[in-house]
Image: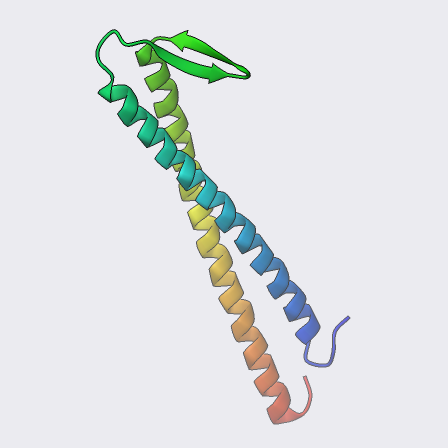
Length: 119
């Protein structure tokens, strides 16, 4: 459904893009918080005295693990999260750009409609 200047199509596209941007931003923020948590945990592990026991929560239990094994797991998780963060950031930029493009098109189309009286 579209009126003579296509504003409904633009509005639907703009709404869809805006929702995608919101979801992507939320996911990026969650990944960013996870990276900060990993950094905090790695810092705490580094601050422990040598020989101090380190435990990892697995399901409903805590399992004693080697410090280096936990550090390696966390560093790998951080690398994966950092890649995801960059991907989501790029997606946000692309969506923002697309939203701005649609808004410009809407504006130009509405101006042309007003000037000519048709589409």
